[in-house]
Length: 106
Image 1 (tube, rainbow, N blue to C red):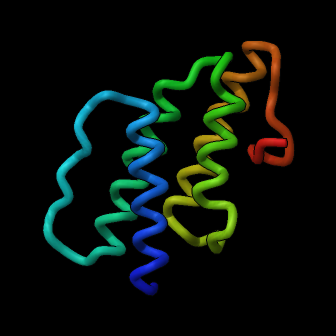
Image 2: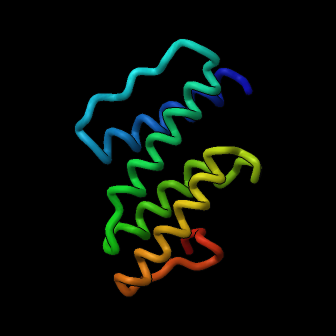
């Protein structure tokens, strides 16, 4: 993956983190930049799914789908987002709204 694509992924994940919490950004251990960013993205989506409520489920689904929609299906972050969307769909249905398309926001 090229440096510009990695930088864009980091910028998106950082922005999502800062919108969701006032906690400092987590430290990344030394290593491969792709693995570092992927690990951070997984932390971000898990935090968003954990904090989601019935009222925020649709927005969380939209934001997380925007992060991964153009990635291959075997991408670990995309897989985590799809699994998280299933959780959000249940939460959303309990709150009366609901997601469609197998977890993708409409």
